[in-house]
Each structure stands twice: as C-alpha cells, then as structure tokens.
Length: 343
Image 1: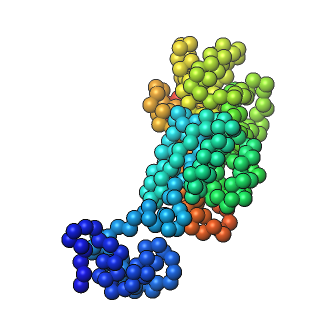
Image 2: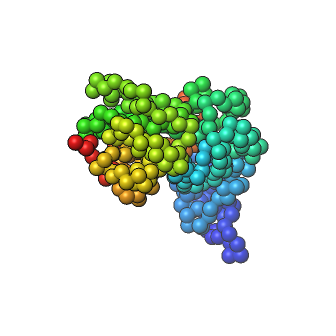
Image 3: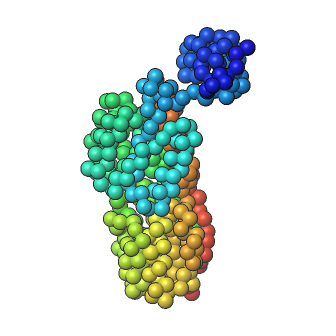
C-alpha cells in the first residue's frame, strides 16, 4: 500500500492509492460534491488522516469560485460594543476557515458604500453588515448580484436578507421595569437616535413599562442625542446634575454614555447610587470595571456574532434558503450603581 512520499507532502494521488479509489472520488469527498457512498467517504477520510493529508483551502476556493473571504462592515470600530461584536464575528468566521475583511464605516453612508464597492471588487463570498444608515442604495445591487448578506444589530426594513438582532424592545422594558420596581418614578432616559431602529425599539419597551405603571411622560424625561460617546455622557451628566428637581435615576441606552454620566456625577459630588441611580445598556466589560459598577441590560454580543456567521455560511452553501430572522434575548445585570430612590 502506498504511503506518503518520503521527499514531500502527500498528494491526492497518494490518498487515492491508500484508499483504493480514484482521484476523482477523493476530489468529490474533499469538495463535498457529487455522490459518494458513506463507506467510500469514510475510507477516503481514514486515508487522509493516516497520510496527514490536508487539502489546500486556497486551491479548493479557486476551483469552486470562492475566495473564503467575508466583508464585515462596522459603524464605529473604537466603540467597545462594536469592537467586541467584530471580534466575536471574526473569530466565528476564522473557526470555519473564512477570513474577515473588516471595514470601519465611521457612521458614514458614503464611506459604507465605498467599502461595499471595494468588497465586491475583492469578490467576497458574502457580507455581514451593521449599517450606518437606514437608507442604503447599494443593497438593491447586492440582491441583484445574489451576494449573500446578513444584517446584524441594526435593521434596514426594505432589505430582504437574513437578520440577527437582540430583543431591544424587551431590553428597554426590563431595564425600566427594574428601576420602577425599585421605586423610581422620576427617571431620565438618554437615547442616541443615531442608532436608528435599536433605539426606537428600546424606547418602545421603556414606554410600555411606564404605561403599565400609569406613569405619564414629562417634557424632560427623554434626552435625545446624535452621539453615544463617553464625552457626550459627561456633558449630559453635567446637565442632569443641575436639574431642579433632579431625577432619581438615569437610564442611558449605551454603557459608554452611562460611564460618562457617572463620571460627571462623581465630579459634582453626587453619590451613586445614594443620590441618583445610573443604568446602562449593552453589557460591555467596561460597565463592570468602573466604581461603582454599572447595572445594565446586556446584549448577547458573542452569540450575535456566531449566529450571523452561521446564517451567512448556511446561505452561501444553500442559496435557495429563505432569509432567517434571529432575535436573541437580552438580560438584566444588577450591579452597584442602582438602588432605591433617596427618601
């Protein structure tokens, strides 16, 4: 029986000889194409293992018109939520022998469109898109070209493709309900409207919790922002610190903003949570590192990345499958920054 060549790596011919099958059969087993009996497939795989034969991913990709590359469009790479989501998605792709081309769009529509054009020139096998805007002209082109795509975190309702989100409406609801259960009725909500639909759904859940308790909205209850940064949080915190009457709780719809608000309160000698409670949203590690640690509504960030990759690869391999709509549960995490209102 033929063994691996002593002067080099084993070849497909060596595997065919070891398994007593044709080279064509070995090729069909490697590429997953054609009809091969289970008995023959197992024989080929045993031969590959014995000879330590590893088929070239690059060669397979070339023959199958694949690049094994996936475009990953992210709105702001230096934001902890998006960077963690990017890492989870890239790791899931890497584990499946795909490589990510990471594109940081900086929340800019034109920049996003230019990256999409670049990815098309690179002949990526698919794209995972966290869009900077709800108006995306290029998506019709992607559909016309039959490019498999998955939207993650942010929705574009007009785009028919697989989508992976966390349950933002439930997240807003459980966060506000928790504050109301503590006894807070004067709550300020800081909402970044640049987030688009995720923010709208969180507000929907918040309003549901308020309605259930019969609490009326007040003019100062919702602070709308076009940013979700730490500096923005500091600025908003300074505004809240001088309100009269001051709210007893703040629900910031991103953890980074909540950390900025916390900093402003501490600088103003306002004790958290004795004088005012602070609640965040996202579940990034940063919220647990500060003092006091911040209660938050956690999104399943790693699971979102894994599900997006699983859905995309499934549609690459099975183009006729209908789109997936995957909604993952959010979770309330109670830490040191929330307590009953001062009496």
